[in-house]
Length: 160
Image 1: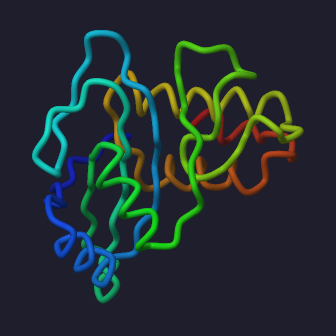
Image 2: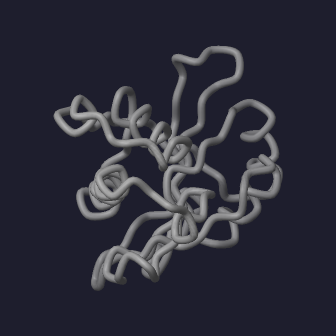
């Protein structure tokens, strides 16, 4: 379920422009850090409040995948450069109605299948609390839940 990916330095604007030129970016999560937790930003900072996490897939070789963890400045710049949807913050400690999609989708206004929503939130909890980067089948399930949130959740997704 966990894959160790190399991080991409995203410190300067020119570096972020190169990243978007060379990689397809997928926003994995935009989340609030739990109390007392910190993360290292690939833009050379210590994150203590909120963070973005992006999966970067090389445009020429899809087998080359890297990760970016960053704060609001670099994260918002990458979203703009890659023309991604503006995310809503996922706060793992807020009630379901108070937390947004955290990955470019607004999940709070959708009529989710209840089991699909529960599985989706469980995946986001893994990302936040276990510091997990979803890949492979787990990433496919997460993406499928975002796209088909209204469908009844299949048992094979839950078992995985």
